[in-house]
Image 1 (spheres, rainbow, N blue to C red):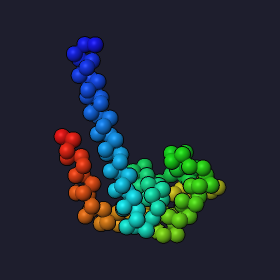
Image 2 (cartoon, rainbow, N blue to C red):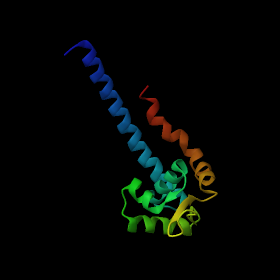
Image 3 (cartoon, rainbow, N blue to C red):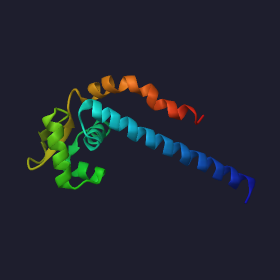
Image 4 (cartoon, helix red, strand yellow):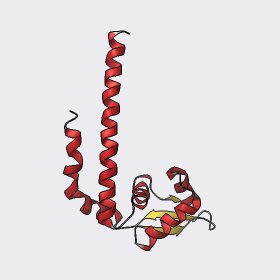
Length: 128
């Protein structure tokens, strides 16, 4: 094995280790945030997805999350009831609805998450 190959393997190992640490701390941070917001983790992540993808039909949301259409309906029912999302008629096809993030959801997440962001970043500092 060449020196370049060994170097690439070592870098890949470090990258995979860093990804594991990031993933683990993200799960813990997201669960704590969901608890603070009174949501379950799946509902928080579905709401978050809407914030970075923009409005979409419920069927598309089911595809992106890997949830069944029945399961995503339950997620959306809970999120709508608590004001995190709203259903809007699709102007192009009245049989469909578009799911939009609720007006205050991003601001509420930012307010709640801000104090914990430093703790969330701490495990990653040791990877430098």
